[in-house]
Length: 150
Image 1: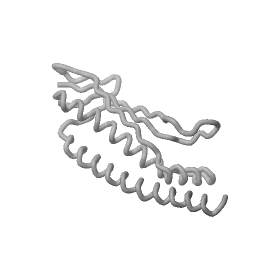
Image 2: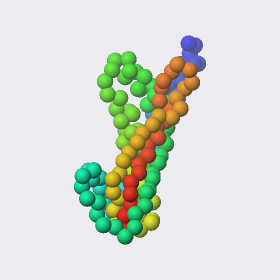
Image 3: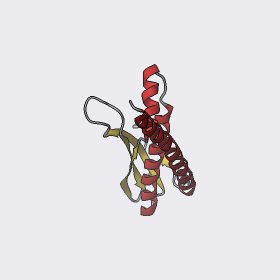
Image 4: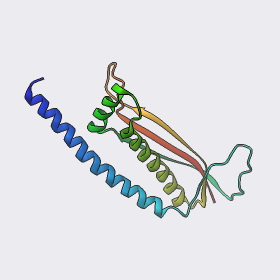
């Protein structure tokens, strides 16, 4: 590796950290604001043997989001894989994805006129990564779905 390649790598790492951190903070701020605005509609998950509440109407709502991994997170996770342990940089990615998908589902239900969203489920999947034998994470997709009732 020559010196110019090292500087390019270092520049990409610093840019990935700076821009990724800024965008993540901005996204969290947006999520917190929208969560506060939608507090009046509860999300409820009940067990299989519990009775469903009476409802005039019911409809399935889905919220989905795909969030990409920035260069710094990918590099940091690769280093953590060498020694093992929690990969906290991916935990924030999953947290933002989960909260964003729930919000999108909930906002869709609110626009329909739902009083609550019942039996909410969350699914995740990885998308992309690099081709070949490298199994690195490219992006994550989070899907939240539930039944809105009036």
